Each structure stands twice: as structure tokens, then as C-alpha cells.
Image 1 (cartoon, rainbow, N blue to C red):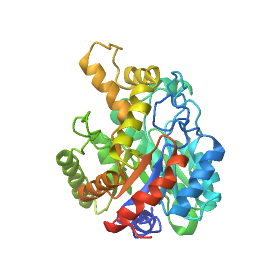
Image 2 (image 1 turned 60 degrees about the horizontal axis):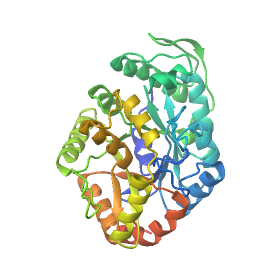
Image 3 (image 1 turned 45 degrees about the vertical axis):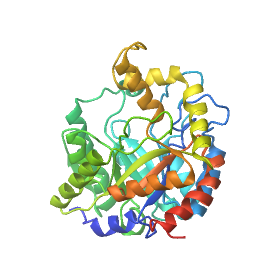
Length: 384
């Protein structure tokens, strides 16, 4: 019999603060982070830089760190996202070196045996005294999985497999006695797992499945849902991409009402790429320097052709649009006033938290903390 985890999940979802809008760092476990750029100041992704960044974010009052699970990367001139840290061990080590941050591990369920993963995550959770979170991914890329000799299931079956995987993990986290698990994908005997997660609670569960099956899986099982926001067309003169409020608000309302049908509440998070400078013109100029003049286009094309299953065709307007969607991935470009205004807009739309990427997190964090944070406090979204 599984325990009712609503109370502990609600407590963990607060991430130790009462801030209306939670702030986090996204993708720092990868070289270059989420910016496919050749500029020399791009993110190193080194261990020492990850530690320094985690401790900076911890002291600044950020709530979470969220890594990307990546095994191959995208090549190009910068070997974009090829140098990456495995995320459960990365999280465990950072949890031991921080005080307040919730730090997620990103787990591909077909690659980790659930009994082993359950034990690894409990270890990380104890290292952080209850600050570990699980970002659950049920499928990924054929090329990456081929490294492990694993083939992807048909789309909806991935979630069936993921459900069994999660059921095993939760039983490892909660069952006081040995148990058998006779499933379709896992047939386990006399399973035992101690210790349990820290403080008689369970790690936060996050999922980002965008398909109907993925959304239903998240609503049934998870405490938080991660989704992207689309923008209107990029304004070349002002450097502004405005959030497309209508569809996003409709999705958020739908997710919350469907979660309520399961007698559950769910936090909803998104990610943005912050390019903030003292003036709008400086921010636009830096954006163009980083992601237009110095984009790693070979790495971008590798992503477009594999992720979107299309051939490279620079003469195609549709191909070029896909190219730019990967390069820009919804940037917040502007002065502190403009960037803070965009954060306020996402909060009003109903987002509970935002994971940020930056060209170089450590270089840009001090300016963000000194200029954007006070504006978010003034807007009532944060407290000191």
C-alpha cells in the first residue's frame, strides 16, 4: 500500500520559500548550457563552475537547479553539449555543498533499473536533507539510446513502461517489507530497499511530456510540470519576443483543472534564456553577437535534422524557422525593466517557477541579482 504523499509533496514544492515565483538555473550541467554559440565566454560546464554557480544561486535565494539529461551532444565547432555530467551523481554532490537549493536529477527510465535508481536518489536526498527532486523522462533520442543497446518503445508504451518504473521506485521508497513486482516490463522478487527518502517524505517529481499521453502521465503522478512558452514573431528592431499569452494560459488552466480531477495540485514551470544588459540596445547587440553572428550553426543543424526528423535545406523557409526556434529558445532580451516585466507576465499567466539559462551563468548572475531581483520583489513575486 503506497502512502499518501500529497502533504509531503506540497511541503517540498514550496522549496523552502513562500515566493510566488520560484527561480532556478536550467542546463548548467552541460558545456555551453542551452546556447549554441561560439563566443569565448560561453558556459564551460566544468565541475568547479557548477559548484560556484550552485553556491551563488543558493546564497541569492534561488529555489532550484534543473539539469538536462544528455549522453551524446550535438557536435559542431563547439562540441555543443557533448561534455555533460550524469545528473543523479551531479545532484548528490551539489546537494552536499549547498544549504537550501532543491536540486533535480534527470532520469531516462529505459536506462536506469528502478531498484538501482531508487537507491541512488535516496542517497542524493539524504545528502541534501530532503532537497533532491526527480525529473522523469520516459523516452529520448534513438542515437543516444543506441549507445546503451536500448530501443525506444512506441510512444504511448514509453509511458506504460515509465508507470511501472515509477511504481517500483515508489514502493522502494515506501514499503517497510520485502515485495514482489510481477509487471509487464519488470518482474522483480523479494525487493528490499533501505533507507527511505529523507524525513519520511518523497522527492518532488517533475515531468515535461507534451503529448496527451505525457500530460496525463504527469497529472497522474507528478508534483510539477515543465512546459515551454511560444512567443510571437521576433521584432528585429526592438529585440522583443512577446509571450503568446492566449494558448499558454489555456494550457495552464487545463492542466490545473485536470489535476484537480485527480484530487491533486500541480506546480507549472517553464524555462527562458535571459540576455539582460543595462539598456535595451546593449541587450539586443549582445544577443545578436552571441546567437546570430556567432551561432554554432553546425550544432544547430544537427539538432534540427535529428529532433525534427527533417533534411537540411537552407533554402526552405520552414527549415529556417525551425533553425531559429532552436537558436532563440524564447529569450528574455532587454534592460532590467523589460526583463522583469517579462517575468511578471509569466507569473500572471500562471507559472509557478522559471528555470533560466544564460550565456555564462556566473558572469551574469551578479547583474541579475542586483537589478532584476529587486524589481521582482517590488512586483510582489519575491521576498528578500
